[in-house]
Length: 223
Image (cartoon, rainbow, N blue to C red; front, top):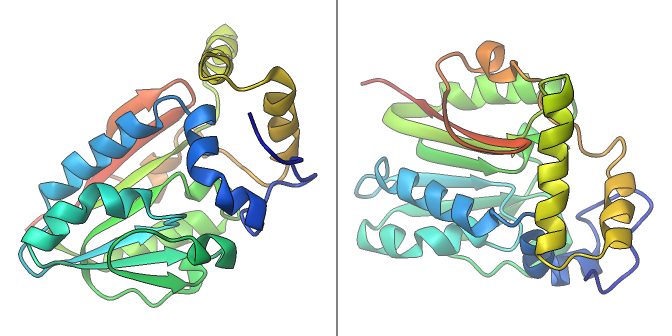
């Protein structure tokens, strides 16, 4: 149950949302912890000794906490980037937290970058450019890991998958009126990726996860 009034336009620049974000996102996305574990498992394969890892759109530190043991063992640098000062204030992960707009951030060459449920909140037209520039900074042998929401495939199957998402939220205890309020608040704020977005934005992306309207990809940089 969302313990506050859902804003008319959804925003992460809100102290109430930041405070309850961890519980809220798990209520809304029942596969959230499963996907987090998958991201951490994949990332471990690409993080070298003394490597550099970026968490783009870090929120309160979920991905960083899942990677903390690996980062410590391999003495890897971890830079978390988050645009919302309210989220930054509640960051509880490893490494360095930077309050910044990722689309304007000057990335170093890195071994692993993770954008977990971030692109759908970026301005259409900017996210393709952002990914192309981000991919250029990836070191040989490294990986860019993306998890995000995508547009429906069309036809009846789109209805089926959308209802799968709604059913999952209800199963986690979300109230129907909260689900509806959140859905309406996302109008114009959340823009799912076009179905073939990865094909032209980052050719070579390999799909590694899918649940209903959400998917995950890995982009490797060959040696």
